[in-house]
Length: 307
Picture 1: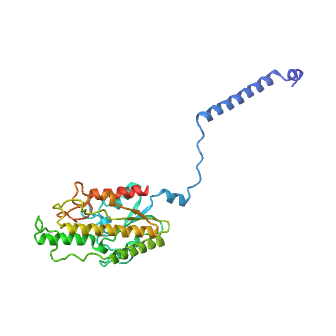
Picture 2: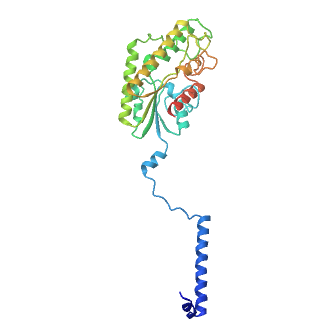
Picture 3: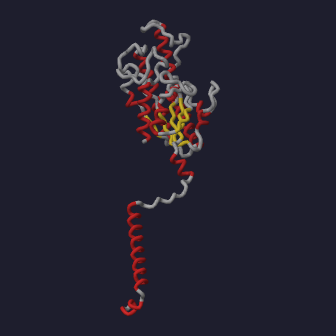
């Protein structure tokens, strides 16, 4: 605007225009200061898809197996079949924030996973559903009379007066040790374990399948002790059964692509007669099964493998 034009504007109107401009600048500056100091609230994002919500929830974990998974003998009894609150599946579920369905059952054989048991329990495999993300399997010992044969041998020795303490209430003197398992028994366990993996994958194709073998119970490298009333040759036979069962489990894992948690190395110094046993001995409830320390140790190995 020219000087002449400005002179033509009345002073009152000019002053009003200037005041309006100053006010507008003040509002703009105040807005900038406010926006820097107090960011505007973020708008609500889009709803989380159901698939993503499912990923944020604890995954489903199913435990299958026999007493070495169920954990009887120490700890508060829970569920069915001798399961206890401190068994290795519950410890694993707590450590990994998983939702556990514990289908393990003391006394189970491999066939009990796929078919109803002789005691009327439903097939353990029914616990596996399409949303299952992890399955652990610890079974096979009863198929080769691993612990049953050991316990019966100990009782027979005590009844014959070969060892002290005298015969206790945990012995069945009417039973006689079963024959030493032949090679075909381990081959049968291996085939049955492979069938279990196939059944799991049919029900839950995305599930991670992990075999957890039995921790060593006895060792020929340890001297005799009152907790293990066996002759040296019986200790050697029992150790052999455990080693062959572990080998059959390892072969099944390799053949099916399942993972394996082997307890042989870690448990070698923690058998019945060791200074710090992971296995309860004669005279204790559920003799020759994992104690609390043993259950915790197995759980630790499983967690390390899965992480």
